[in-house]
Amino acid sequence: MTERGTKDLPSLEELEAEVGRRTGRKHILSILVQNKPGVLTRVAGLFARRGFNIDTLAVGPTDDDAISRITLTLDGGVHPIDQVTKQLDKLVNVLKIRDLEPADTVARELALFKLTADSATRAEVLQICEIFRGKVVDVSKRSLVVEITGTTDKVEAFERMVRPLGLIEMVRTGEIAVARGRSET
Image (cartoon, rainbow, N blue to C red; front, side, top):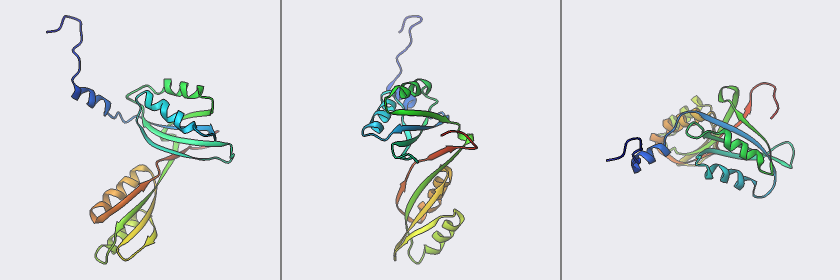
């Protein structure tokens, strides 16, 4: 029996449910950083220390060789993201951070699928590839490698369609994104 005004401690199951909860508030962060060793480790570590799970992470060069862009997506509804972006801004090698609104953003992902494609399933796999505007990038007697580019939903829909036909292997890049219209970064 607990005293009046004191909270009961949550059970382990309740804590695990809280940690695994998804709110649907997707954040796409575009972070410009100096192209130096250890920057990605410091950025990712900042999110890990605050209990954020990074859904996708893509890093690549910009038009300036000294600057790289980190694009990461995460569910920001469980924890407030403002505090972590302020702390990111204090990191020495971080130049600029933008929290892109998903509705005002063009975001794409690249995926490669190695699929079983023997004589019985090859025609069906090729038909599905055509529907999704996929590109066959490798062919062998028993398999195909297909490249799909598009939104995360499109990539996941393609996976659901081809999985029953024989998905051997799948590799995804994670999202990259840019704000719509004319704006900086």
